[in-house]
Length: 308
Image 1 (cartoon, rainbow, N blue to C red):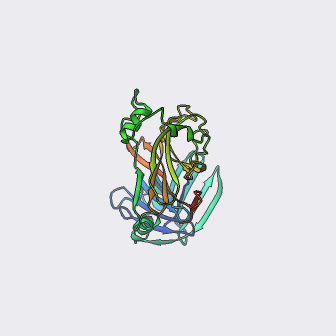
Image 2: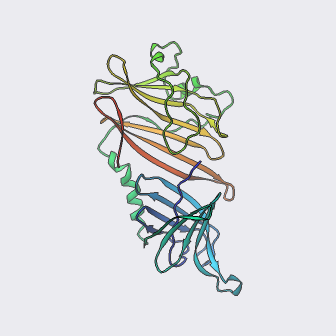
Image 3: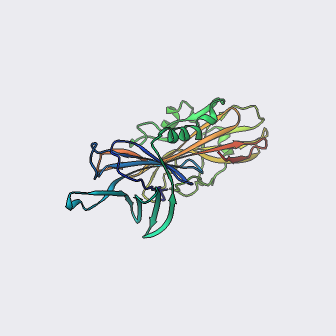
C-alpha cells in the first residue's frame, strides 16, 4: 500500500504554533504538540495537501536536535519514518522539503514559510467544496453503518440500512456488467466477476439510465476484509450499456479504507478515497490519506475525470 508523504523544513522550532510551508508541489501545515518552550519535542504532527490532486496526508514525528547532552539541544529539523521511507525537515538557509525512499533522495524542494494558516484552510475548502456550492446533491453515500462488521451482517442488511429493497428477482439485476476495475489510490482486491443486486436508480434529465448495483465480494486479499460495493452503471433509454464505475467501496484492516460518493444535478459527481490508521502510541484514529476526485457524465453517457 503506497502512501503519499510530504516533508518540509523550517527555520526554528515554534512550539504550539502552526506553521505553513508552500512548495511548488505541496501545501503543508506543521504543529508541535508539546508544551510551549520545549525545544525538543517527540509529538509533532503535520497535514499536507498535494496541489495537483488534493491528496491529504496526516503524520506524526519528532524534532531533530543536536548537543542535547551539552544542554543547548539546538533544533535543526524534524524526522518522520514509515517503513523504508524517511521524511526529514531541515533548517537550512531557507525552508526545504526532502523525501528519501530506501536511503535515496526522491524529492528535495525549497519553499516559503508563513504563519498564515488560512492559506492552507482556504486551499482545502476551495479544492472541492466551493466548486459545488451552486450544485444540488441528488444522491449521496456518506458512510457504512457502524455494525457493518457484525458477524451476521449481510448484504440484505446493507440494503435495509440504506432504505432500499433487496430483491434477488428484480429483472434489472441481469443488466449488471461485471468485472469493473477498481479505481483509486489503493487496490485491495481484484475485479469482481459475480452477480449483483439492483440498488437504486438516480433520476436525471439527460435521457440516460443511471443505475446503482451492489454486491459483497467476500474474497479477502492482502489482509483486507472487503465491505459492500456499489457500482454506478450507465445505460441509454433502451438499456444498452454505456459506462460504469465503482463509486462506493471499503475494506477493514489495520488501516481501513473506504470510498464514498456524491452526485449532483449537473451530472457531475465526487468520489472521496480515504485511508486511516490507528495510532498505537496515542490510542487515536488518524487519517493518513484523503483524495477527492471529480467526474462528469457527458451527453453520451461516458464518465470523464475532471481536472480541478
